[in-house]
Length: 224
Image (cartoon, rainbow, N blue to C red; front, top):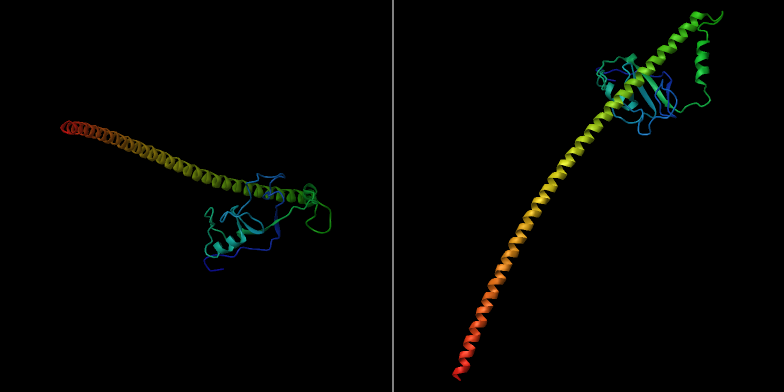
């Protein structure tokens, strides 16, 4: 890492379950097929190692190192981050044999110090940690959904503007086509009128020639 950036802290061993494509802290069930948890910088779906920042933005490993080598500012929200503001996560397949409720209860009933009996104070502290973890996961999820909503909104706006531009271009092409067709029709009408006038002139000339031949032909026969 350069002196202008900082290295994210790694090796936490946390994971994001990916069988249903859900971020941490979300409930079970399948999300919409067109929506995937993706890197907030390059927008590629997260599939392996990723880094969750304390600002609830998340980046793939490549973007994390390529960006934060040069800057300590989050490229999504602009917050300044330190080394301990990063949590390394791994997108992992869901363990179908894990009972989440049982795991949570077991965490509550796990003594933090060896020896002695489990005290209510320890249970309360464990519960508070679980609640804080759920709050953090919920906050993360809400921010990601908000970012996805903004991205979809921008895409929809761009699509709408493109559609309007295509409609305007189509209207212009129709108007141009109509104008050219009118010009062609006028040109054809003019040519037809000229042709009729030329045909009338030729017919009149042929009539005069016939009369001339008839007159001179009749006169020549009388002289013989």
